[in-house]
Image (cartoon, rainbow, N blue to C red; front, top):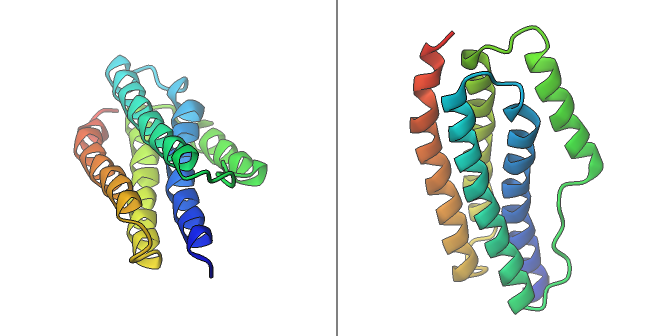
Length: 149
C-alpha cells in the first residue's frame, strides 16, 4: 500500500472516531434535562470538534482529499440507537451510561486503530493520543452521573 494511502486511512480512522462522538452528542444532548450533564456534553463536543479540525488541517496541509465523515448508514444507526435507548428512559443515569458506552467504544477504536496503523505517521499518532487521553478523562467526568436517577 502506498504511503499516502496509509496516512489517509489512518487519518480517516481518527476523523471518523471524532465525528461519531460529535454526532452522538448532538443526538443525545437534547434528551437530557440535567443542566450539568448538558454542560459536560457540550464541553466534550467542543473538544471533539477541535480534534476533528486538527484532522481537517492535517488533511489540508498534506493535500489529502479523501477525508471522509461517517456514511449515512452509520449516522442512521447512531441516531436510532440514541432514540431507542432514550425512548423509555431519559434519566441522567441512562444518558450517562449511553455516553459512557460510546466513550468506551471510542477508546477501543483508538487502541485498535493506532495498532493497525503503527509506524504510519508520528503526527497522526499525536492526534490519536490526544483523542485517547481526552476520552479517558471523559470517563472520569461522566462516571458520577451514574449515581443520578
